[in-house]
Amino acid sequence: MRHDHIISAKQLSRGDIEEVLDRAAEIDADQSAFGDRHPGALLGLLFFEPSTRTKMSFTAAIKRLGGDVVDMGPVEYSSVEKGESLADTVRVVEGYADALVLRHPSEGSATMASEFVDVPLINGGDGAGQHPTQTLLDLYTVRENAGLDDLTIGIMGDLKYGRTVHSMAHALTNFDARQHFISPESLKIPRNVRYDLHEEGATIQEHTELEPILDSLDVLYVTRIQKERFPDESEYREVAGEYRIDAGTLERADEDLTVLHPLPRVDEISHDVDGTSHAQFFPQAHNGVPVRMALLDLLLGGETA
Amino acid sequence: MSADEQLRVSKIPEGTVIDHITGGQAMHVLSILGIEGGDGDTVSIVMNAPSDRLGTKDIVKVEDRELSQAELDVLSLIAPAATINIIREFEVVEKHRVNRPDEVVGVLSCPNPNCITTEDEPVESRFDVLEDGVRCQYCETIVRDDIAELID
Image (cartoon, rainbow over all chains, first blue to last red; front, side, top):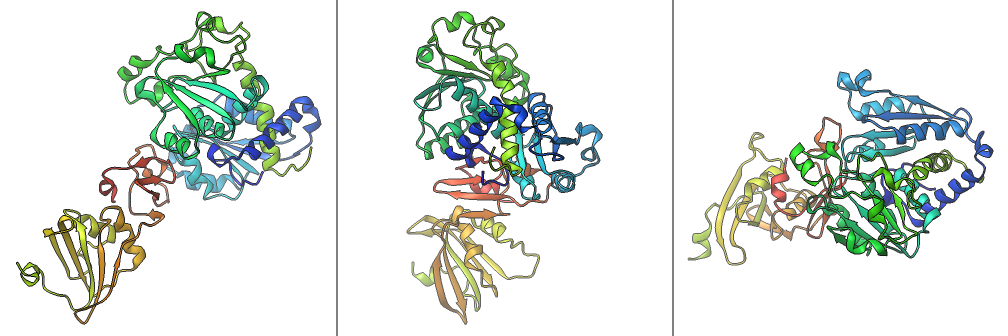
């Protein structure tokens, strides 16, 4: 891994991705063997937005490598409330930690913050921008279930504001993947993502309905229509609920279809899907620990396992 | 009408003449160059003059200042046909066109209200120049139309 910071899936080559996934597989096979990899290492957590999975799995990851966290805590109890800039906050906190994880509501925040620090900075989600570590665990789960080459994947839901979608779509251009995007007109992938996919020569198709392509898919990646990203509630209500799946929907799918979701879900995947062989979203969430352990191990200088 | 009759503003002794600016963009040109009139420079502006090539064009003459190529390349975003004449002793001593730069720094403001550069942070805006637009290096928003409206 030759990167100082992990800001966007765009910066990751196929080799980078495979290095992380291979290390994650080694960790998965014998997690205890990595318990003393980074004794005393401190991971600084700067979460300016709510998080369950990203924050807890990074915490679990560094602790399982023998390290610990230093956590800014909620914004309302920090100096941010006193008007401190993000640039100042990260410059202070880099003195307390060996690496930083930043989640922030503004697009480009991780790029900017990385310009002010020398320790590795990991983007844990920047507004509607990117979420590259989610993508690594998503790819790990796809590789385990369907393989990453000769892959037909449907990505459905909020493609405009969903940062996990933007990162995933970029990362998949490194593999032999056909990407189908399924969303309402108002939530199609944004212009900048489409531009990059076009530049990479990716095979993509956009749809407003799942039904016509469902039986061709190896993987269906469902995302939440995010209420907090909408300027007003009426626009949210208009589109929410149009892109739900249940066990009945999946009867028309290939029996080996893998259904993923970055979680949290609201009601876009009915609970009756949970018991089917398609449902892989809880194992996907659990993969956040070995994959983030692998990434931290590589960033903190773990050479060979 | 002869060339002399079309010469609406007199020749300048020393400085820079920016000709063939897209009609109506002269004020944006001054804004990009940071020329606000407060520092005492003598500046002449012709707007919407007839032009064989452009239909109408603007001309800006800045006395006693020789603007650098890097300063002027930013103008290519809003006035791609602009020509630059460096004047010494009433004569044109250099004449060149503007080139599209790879990036523009601190000139445009990002139109994405959720971009980190629109907040109170110690960073300048940075845009990559694409074939048909510009792209924020921070939030990656692409702008193709009305780039002049992004000028700070």
